[in-house]
Length: 187
Image 1: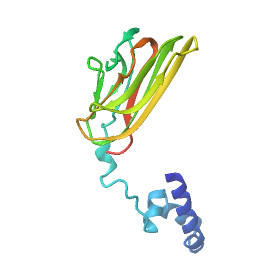
Image 2: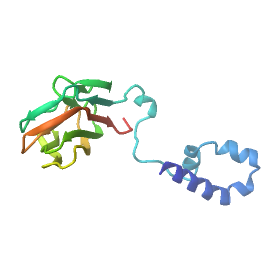
Image 3: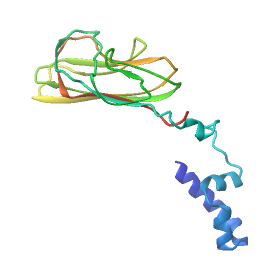
Image 4: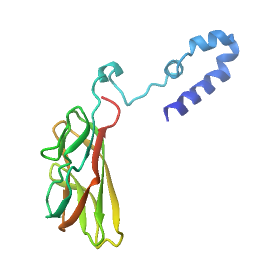
């Protein structure tokens, strides 16, 4: 969207202001889309603080199920023990929970692999409330991956996790089951 806005700003300015300037001075005066938009009075409303305050605040994690799970009863939190990335230290593999270190909008995705005949209902929970549901029931494929996704606003300290619900999950394969999440850009 931002490149489109910048292009639109260039078009608007070039139709009026550019005709009165030499090409070299036009380029130096309007060296970036931010200058262009500022010159026509457009300022983005989504950011109130400077981007320099955002440095070092990447929040992202990716974890894989480290052991195969069998006969997992309902209301069991899935603990993804093999952590590949944990920027911001929000994910705790011993609890299976992600704790938001900052307020913001977060994106979470999880995929699980089950075998033929399996039932598996895995939901995305925020502070104990089921927010997203995905399931396999009486699966007919030899192996099947199923994925869930949730984008949600969290406050600092809110927790997200993946948990079984409604049915016992007969088998969840370790190598093809993972959870990842990240905070969308902005401070």
